[in-house]
Image (cartoon, rainbow, N blue to C red; front, side, top):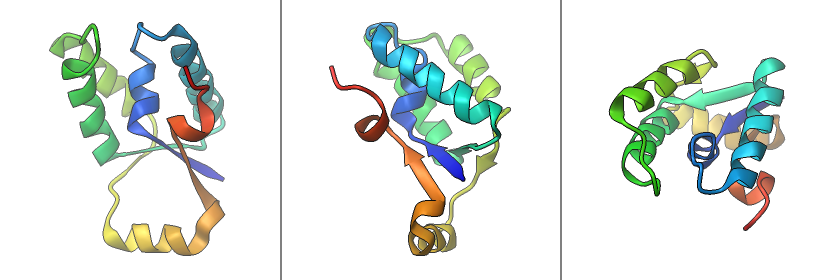
Length: 107
């Protein structure tokens, strides 16, 4: 089974304002990444870069954000198109998104 990672989970990897969520995000990425089940999309990578450089309490420098972005591209990257969205909706449980609402503990 493959797991699409939500932008927020990736942002929590670098957000030092919430160590609990940061730790959980790292656990998830290590688990799914090491098993080859983690997937990222080009959209999530774009959103990640904007979020970590502009929206964190302590934003990352562009240099560090670019390094983090490059590191994340070691994972499988999918460019999502409308056909993929429809196919994923038909398959339902074959591809599960990993996002804050289902996986990370609330504050």
